[in-house]
Image (cartoon, rainbow, N blue to C red; front, side, top):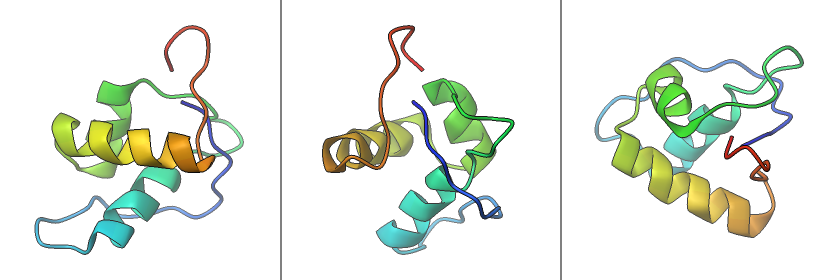
Length: 72
């Protein structure tokens, strides 16, 4: 998955609104870190892999992320 987020975020805590969790995913992408695997993205954002996958699917459908040929 690749994105172009600019802000940094602290890891997501349980009970945070879904919007905050989605934004915490987007915030992990920087000019130097433009592509991340799902496991790495989940770890950096402080989310479970299942939550990360669910949000990444929605963000990809919406066009906020794109999946690269290598799966990132």
